Length: 328
Image (cartoon, rainbow, N blue to C red; front, side, top):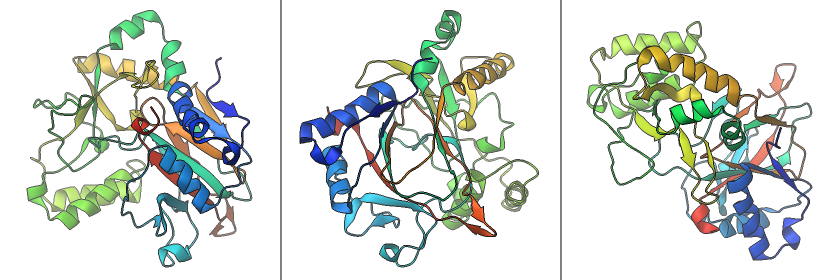
């Protein structure tokens, strides 16, 4: 099998600006790029992220106050955040790509390991380009022009000026996934909607307390007649930089396939999930590891933090995001 990731034996601090930019470009071709043994300060990492195109202040509570490009992914209390922990401080993160429902999601995410857990806590990466290459031709033909129906958000996405996003007025054919549940903003207050969305996004199955709470709120808010809101995104994505075709398939958020009858798409869905999961790389973090991973043709997930007794082992990653326009 072709490699799921590309490992580079270079020191970014010794590279020219153009060489640094080329590392980001390689992510467009390989989906996942790994550099080990980097020794980066915040100033150095922020400078690299700026070269890769992240110059925007995100105003997120989990970003470093002096280096807006750096976001803290950690379960530690951070003095830089006023004693708060960073983003995603607990638990397993399931398969996803960032900005699934966003109008203009980031193209690439980077993680730099400052402090790994004592025991393994892997981040696992999928490669949608290699998965697509190995599909049988009849499956490629079947999905070539397919659009996924994706949802898990409370916002409405009826915009026509984004070429990667198509909104249609008809209802989805399959509505039996609790992930597809959403509500109209005028039926609850913004704070109630936010709470419901948070519960919905962390659901782990019908037996979980979270799922039961979501169902309670659904009944409480009397939203049985609420409209379903979702977006359509093309399953076979042609990369804007590499020109390669790959799968854009955040399967945990998929509630249907446009133009494929409901009695057919479930079998196709299960086949694609099983196939896609063969193309994964599980990364055991070490201090100085830097990983870049594409958000348009790849997925990733995180294992739960290991524990010592009742306490999670500490881990600190610095996260950055960028758009490929910054390195083209």
